[in-house]
Image (cartoon, rainbow, N blue to C red; front, side, top):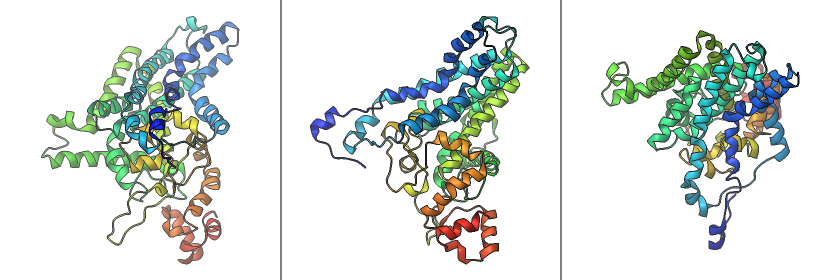
Length: 422
């Protein structure tokens, strides 16, 4: 909802979340913040407890953010029309995303040192970290990489060349530089259709979706970039064009960065790289999974899909995770206005809503029976029980047809839910 403001109110209007957006820096600074706590625990003789702060990433993601979303609930405020241009052009907001990057890479390097150091007596350890602490450390760094993908997502949609390069730099930590291509030129075109590898199908478990989306997105990004280069008369395999190939130059950033880290810290760093990178891009794919689960754009008589509308993205207006993820949860507005900056995104009418914030829903995706219990009836309610309007997994379609024939594809929700859950 938007409201009409008087001229005085327009001048006086202020974004109440203006300085709260700095919460986005929690992820890339958490490791530094935890080190004094580690040292204190060791000084007090609590050596087992001193391992726990290295798990700050998973603790923040799976415990603290869901609890804060539950405590503070939805935002409920949208910027009015009259202030949109001023808010969009306020450079403070883009600096909030830019500053993520130096803290991100400082944390990755600090983590590499802690993971491989043989003498951490200054932290109170006798020798190196235990594997319990190392795994927590790698997962925490992976978490900031996953949030970094979202930061890159914000910058990668912009027309400014600097922001696009910053997006690829941010993606280098998780080896997901191709996301810059696939998300902008693939996902936004095919969203909420069976052809989109990043749109989850009704009845598809997260563990089925993950390899499909990882491989499908990488394959799609290469095909899209190859098409772009061929249209300009260049081959994607020509060494003279490698630097202009946005997939290859993005991947090269990862190779150079981690090659340099291995040269400094040695081969013992490889488990750290693998754990953090895989966990980081898996968090992205988890969010992909829940953003469009079961939602489908209908085909027109022309054979083309209808235009993407608010009804084709799952939203959440829970304020804490929105601050943490730069309004990513206002996803319908993002698909309607991909270049709109995060501070001006709105909670849109007509969009289906998740029961809680993304942070709360991520944990559910790992447990398919629990996820389907929470989400399947919401998909069916959204389409008034008409399964023919749902982006349904082929396995589920076959199961429904085998049990009922053609008729249940247009049953009411209560009958459809019973048919697909067995």
